[in-house]
Every structure is written in structure tokens, then in C-alpha cells.
Length: 307
Image (cartoon, helix red, strand yellow):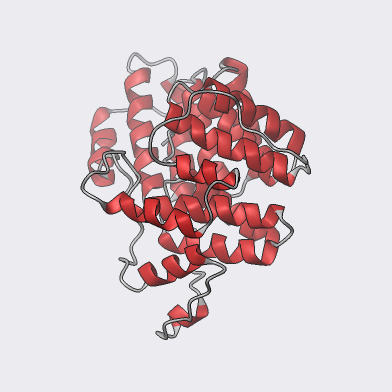
């Protein structure tokens, strides 16, 4: 799922057979891993470019030319809103390149210009999460929610923190809100998936989705997989459809769909008591290098726990 808020931390967890140049044998029990291995051979090693992000040198030039005041004086300046917007763009550009530390600096500068802006605080929380500074991310997202407690994306981020910290009751409540409140039905499906997984990981015997009209296209096959209506192997076709000419959904090409599928299916393996299998799926996800997807940051956090 694309971050709606816009690393030096890129983990090279390439599967051993690929690293050695030898094609691994297919494992019919894990078809998504087979697909990941197949695509890894020809995939560009560079991180996938984040869509809609400004060119960093251009933004830095604009900031330099803007005459922005010192951070402590920015909030009281006439151009505070403009300066905050420039810093936000710079933060999004750095985040898109995987420089989450640099992005946090830019978002803090934006916050100094607009200290009551919930969006800026949520953006800061997102990159702190990717840096695994969970205490800092919690402080920022709590401050964001104190300003706008109904914001869907802020609640999603708070749910992600609860999820990796295994605060299952809190995560379930957050994701239930996201799944039921997001006006975009396809985006709501990601809340549904996390709502389901939080229940599974929290020991709920009969997990459920929020009752609402489903979206169209991706990621509906993943919801059907969770319900037992699709096998893992049957996910391959809709994943590959991401590169078809008929796919008009943004940020859902084959690599992006595979990234998401590896996370949700991998987490389902963990819920079944197979964390070692989950780790292989999460490692394959990280190797795709879709840094601007929420699932990428979640996968890194989960891998760190499995160590």
C-alpha cells in the first residue's frame, strides 16, 4: 500500500540461491516465494521510484532561495505556511529515496513552521516508524491524533505501531476504524487486511472483516485469500495482472502487488505458528525495494523482531 503520507536502511536479504546465481528449486507449497525468486533475477536492483515526489535538488534549491527564517522563528513569520510546504516536499523526496533520517529532519523543520498541523506530525511519525524509533513515532502520532483524532491515516499509523508492539486489542480497534471509515473502498481493504491479521495474531478464533461494500480489483484477492476463497497459488494470476495493459489502478503493478501479497500472506503464516516461513516472505518483500509502501516498513519491523 502506497504511503499516503509522504533508507539509508535497505536490508539486503537476498535468498541464498539467488545470491549465488543458481536458480532455486520451485517449492509448490510456497508459490509466492517462487514468483519472487523468478522476478528477482531480472528486476532492477535500484529502489522503485516513489510516485508524485518532487526532485530533491530542485526542492533544496527552492528552500535556499526562499529566505526561510531560522526554525525557531518560522512559526511567527509571514511565509510560515509556504516554508512548511517546502520542507514537506523535501521530506517526501528524501523519504522516497530511502533517507528516512533526512526526511525526519525536514518534517521537524516543517513542524517548527506549523506546530499545530496534524498532517506534518503524522508524516514525521511515519518516517520515525521506518527508522524503528517507535517511541518517537508514538509521541508524534499521539500529538497528531490530539489535533485530529478522526484522521484515517493517522489512525492507520497508530495501528501499525500497536501491531508491531503486539498490542492486539488496540491494533484491532484502530484497524476496525480505518476499515470502516476510509471513503476509498480499495484503500479501506488494506485496513480490512490489517484488521483481520491483528485478530489472527491476537488469538481471535473467528476473525472477521468489517461489513461494507468491497472495492474493485486489487487487493480484493488478498481478502479472498484470508477467507479461504483463494489459495496462495491462485494469487499469482491477479498479481501478474498488475503489468497488464488493462490495469488502471495506481501503484499496483506486478512488483507492487507481489510486495503486498508477500507481507499479508507471510503474516498469515506467522499467525499459523510458522514465523520461520513468515521471515522468508518478509525478506523477499524487502528485496523488491518498494520503499514507499507501508508494508516495507512493517516488514523490516517484523524481521527485526524475528531476529
